[in-house]
Image (cartoon, rainbow, N blue to C red; front, side, top):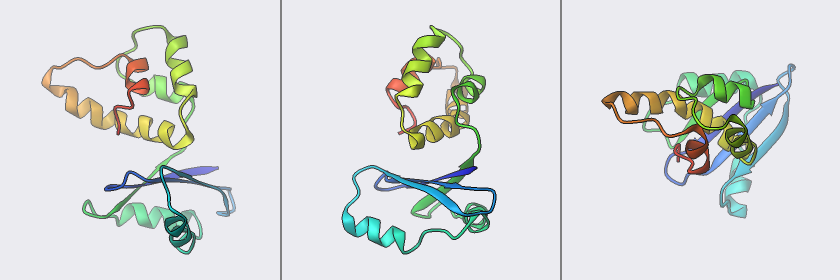
Length: 138
């Protein structure tokens, strides 16, 4: 399965898409406070396959309302491997990670690269459990 996330930069609304190997959309989840009108509007524009999603990622502009990303592994192991500061009890971090929605897991992993850039000024990284519980990526 290939997993993608789309996040609206202004409202913070998120959509996760999961496509099978035949590029058939199998799961679409919305996260946030969606109105019925917004859901209806999105359903009319659902991507037809992974090719369309990859094009949306390739040609997206920074000023675009929706930002698209792909992530293939959203397991705790993938998060723990990428997170630069491995302090605190791993079990507590894993418990915090397992409480997150699929969309938040994807965002948490994707935001790590941005967090590393932000912390180049010498400020300390938060403990991984704190990063997850306080949702630093939002």
